[in-house]
Length: 104
Image 1: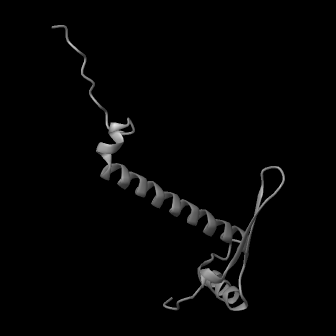
Image 2: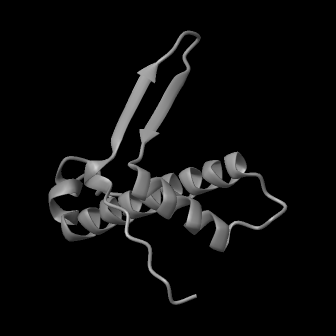
Image 3: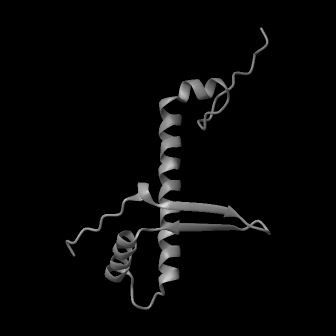
């Protein structure tokens, strides 16, 4: 499976519409060539027992989970790199030892 598929994400028309009852409709419009490339991609990697809609939901879910992991890693890295600054405002996750004044 050394065939590559080119998808030009910049040319995609993506719409997100807020719906009633707190729902959302996402719509992605592909060009003829991009639609063909995506269908070829599905034909190559989609298990036959999974319908196309379920496969696309899985791709979307995996993308969201991957982005969430990257964001969490970026936050963790930022917190580690800025621990002194964050701890000075009480946002460090490291336990701090507070000194109790002793009577003199």
